[in-house]
Image 1 (cartoon, rainbow, N blue to C red):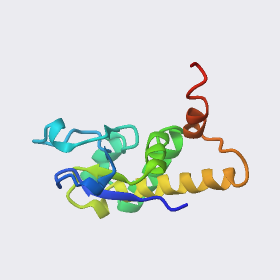
Image 2 (tube, helix red, strand yellow):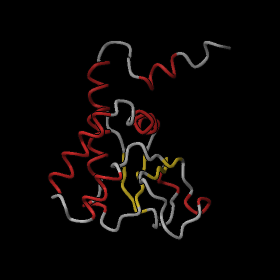
Image 3 (cartoon, rainbow, N blue to C red):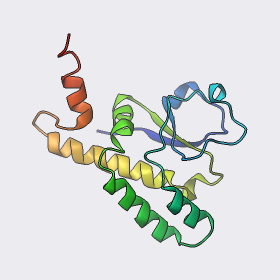
Image 4 (tube, rainbow, N blue to C red):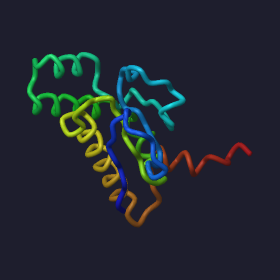
Length: 145
């Protein structure tokens, strides 16, 4: 299945076609009020750690090292992608960041990780009932009622 995950600067105006808009930065963007961003969520758990972000911005590590360490952080936190995967399954997902250069930010790495996790989950569910936390949440949503 094809999933639509877009990358956008948080300072760009919100559009009707954005779908779910999720800010994926540790820090709140300067000069922006929450109401003006039309956010679905501010999700810090999938953004790079403060240490990694600082090392990258100060030039202490290369892009390749940043990417590798960020992928490790994502892998170490098993459930950090689950909310983003759930939103991607519902329609277009727009990942937002305050960074000036989206191509050199963490967002392309995060999008690739989400797409890989979705593809793996789809492979596992091929011909069987889905077994991921988002799928279980849907399956047991009405149990208590």
